[in-house]
Image (cartoon, rainbow, N blue to C red; front, side, top):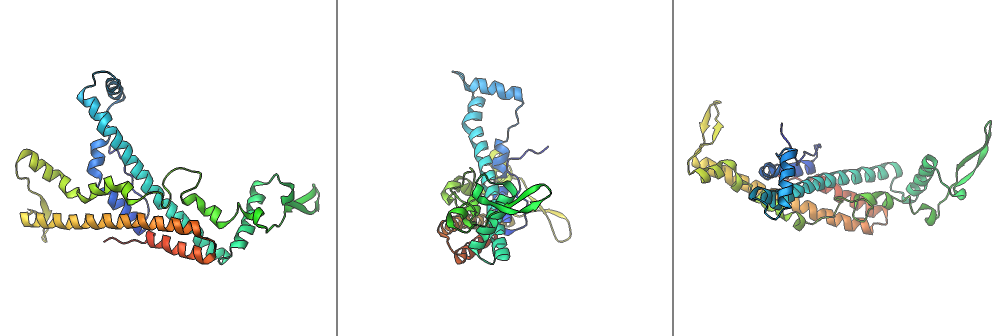
Length: 284
């Protein structure tokens, strides 16, 4: 069975492709820190780590493995949440322009009526008589269009959940900077230096051939020149990947600032364009 920390983002858009590729280059780090202990072994190490004489294995577990395991899990959560929030914000903005034609006032008025109709309200002024039926007096949601009544039903209020400042924790659009991901970005840049074949060669001092399939379908040993060329190409690809990943984070912060200042339909149209540009990022 293969255990995982870094789970794939299940989407076909370009942003998901970039984030998944970024995570794949961290596969070796993931395998190093994945726990393989039984519960009994873990409890023994836990007790040793808290003792006055922890052994080397216990120190390795709690000083190196556990922090990096947690760090990788935060990375996976962050990339997944970032992708989801961008997608959800785009969906809500597209619906706003398609259904309300950019009319912010109508959006808030109708959203208030729909919300109170579905979930109710204890404010008596939110209701008005709507005739009588066999069960007695009927009521409907009272129409209101003053700013105070609509303040909790605006487009800005509904989009807030995807950006910094919402009540929920986790990665939002623009929460983190490229510097916050610097540890992992450097790992991706240096991924070819951690190639298992290269590390094994350095450890054993023996030449370990790498094979590839040629034009006729035969498996042939790769020449040193081919191997160096592949490594250079891989290095360039990883450098490019990190560059575009950092650009996504920078643009997400720009989008977050645009959201904070958005007050008109034109502002929200620009925000939608910014988010779609992030979603459609291309790095290859």
